[in-house]
Image 1 (tube, rainbow, N blue to C red):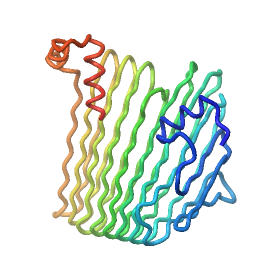
Image 2 (spheres, rainbow, N blue to C red; image 1 turned 60 degrees about the horizontal axis):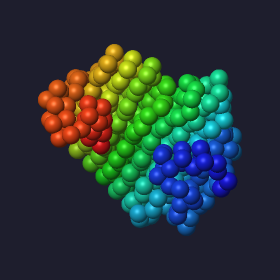
Image 3 (tube, rainbow, N blue to C red; image 1 turned 30 degrees about the vertical axis):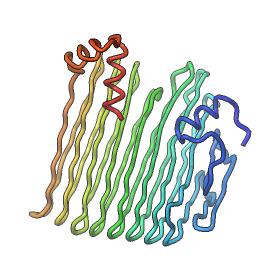
Amino acid sequence: MNLDEIEKDLLKRVADISGVPEGAYNFRINGKSVGKKSTKNIDVKSKAEESGIDVFIEPGTKKDVVHIPVILSESGHKETVYNDFYIGDNSEVTIVAGCGIYNCGVKNSIHDGIHAFHVGKNCKVKYIEKHYGTGPSAGKILNPTTELHLDESSYVKLELEQIAGVDSTSRLTKADLKNDAKIEIEEKLLTHGRQIAKSNIEVTLEGENSTADIVSRSVARDTSKQNFKLHITGKTTCRGHSECDAIIMDDAKVIATPSLDAESLNAELIHEAAIGKIAGEQLTKLMTLGLTPDQAESKIINGFLK
């Protein structure tokens, strides 16, 4: 791939790679696929009638990795991309996504990623998605949608992270689970300036002994605004837990709305939410160790979002 220094930096930040990785991949830059590779067990195909890819993972695939990063470095580029994943029974796979935007112009740069996961039986899937924005201009916008369908005894872990620099984001994550399936969602978010972030997570526990564990951690600085909605529906014998923790600073605003819907006597559902400022004694303790106020504050934030 022929990448400039800005694009290389974005790729490193959102996918933690410096070049072409091993295994299957699809690289998308400014609306075009600039590199695509299938392997023996993973077939990556471009969609025929719309932007995006279909990824077919063979049953029994073990410990393979798929990289599908997206980079926007042209100001004013707008796109909606549809990616579908079909994961065969008894597979173990890691999918590394992520989008980085550099904007130095006057027009908004927007990436809307629509991802659907069809997870077979007895699978183990990790999905990593990082978002990052940079450049002197505002108008770096990311709106991801993730839909997951988990078959019996499957396990999916989502690691969703907005690193910095995204001016506006509206995230929707939806999942439905069959018998003995489990999902873990870890969401981390940092906003600053006048940024706006919305996140809506909806999980439906349809199958017997299905489980959901959702944890959202965020830091809101300056005059940024965050709005979280976490909803779990339990339709049968199941267990669900949601936790939303936020640090609020300066003149920021945070709204957290966890909700539960129990449709069975045997549904065990729990939610927690906490919003607060950095404790003064934490800052004082770190400053007694030689850190400046800014260094102490940064260390606390990094530890909270780790």
